[in-house]
Image (tube, rainbow, N blue to C red; front, top):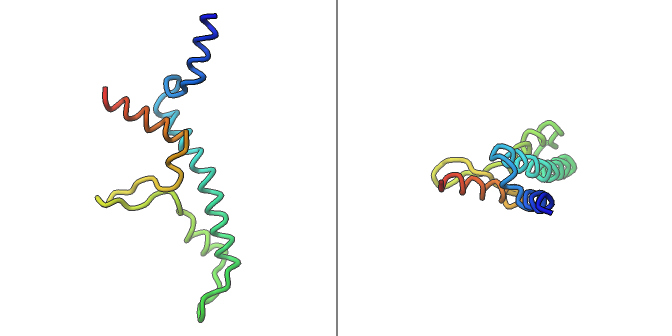
Length: 105
């Protein structure tokens, strides 16, 4: 029974069972999967969209270059870059909570 409780504790509290690097990697992977879908949609819209008046149609390479970094970061007031899209995913929340606990020690 004690062994079952021990296992259940670590399954339900993954922040305690993983290192900060592992939590960051999980957050990155979750964000990457979501952001990639949005980027692909934006690229397809860019390629298929009719060009603006007097503008040449954009090639797939131009659209990929333009939208390739979409969603990863945005500028902050202090001039630094910070994560932008999907930073509120459960994986990212766990990593942020673990980082806060580590800094408060």
